[in-house]
Amino acid sequence: MLAVVLAGCTSNSAAQQPAPGVVQQSATPVIPSTVGGTVPVPPATMSTAKPTDAAVPPEVPEQATAPPPANAGPLTAHNLPTPDKLGLGWKTYTDPGGAEAGFIGNNTWTRRRDPHQASYEALPSGCAGKPVTGALPIPAYALTGSYRTADNQPATALLLRFKDSGRATSYYAGYQARMKACGAGGDLSVKQLWTTATATAAVRTYAAAESYVDLSVVHGSTVALLATTSAQPDKQSDWAHTVVPALEQVIDES
Image (spheres, rainbow, N blue to C red):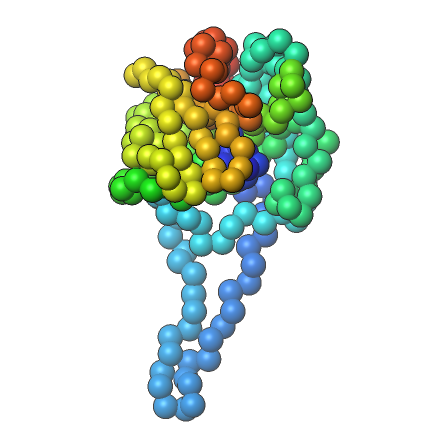
């Protein structure tokens, strides 16, 4: 589930861009210009305009044809907290990837994501609450880092680096609006733990699946989304507070 949402936060990760050899756009099928020789049908073409709304899914999903780079533009492993800053016994995790994960492993714990797909997949979906509308900016870069907790539970961090702090703040506000409106009773339920002007902790619970703590932080031109599976997510409020300074210290460094 984290990989779909943040990957991210995850399994699903699911995050929200392309380096040579990493993403290959599939060929667009050509529809004949006539059907039965009488009804003209325009050829099927994909938009050539650069996407501008992270709330709209990409026309062509990110496709894995080669291992992704470990860095995403200026974002590197140095922009993610070291495991000891996240908790006693935490460690980085080299995700092998695979067909189900949707990417090819690159033998390290960080990997570049397509910015549009990563920022879109990070948004909550399957909620029972009234949907929130409105465009969201697409980041310039996206990087995922994988961890394991002291209990060997999966945790994922997603960094979204925008062109400026205004765009980062706008995405963060839209993300929080969607999380707060999600409510309970749908395929996804969201419970807020606490919130400040620049950080929020919540619990995401998927129907008939695990729950995890969702920590989001905006600092400068970067939004960080950290998700970790927990057997007792409602009791992780204090832990989430302690992690915020660790994220703020590194996520927006050049």
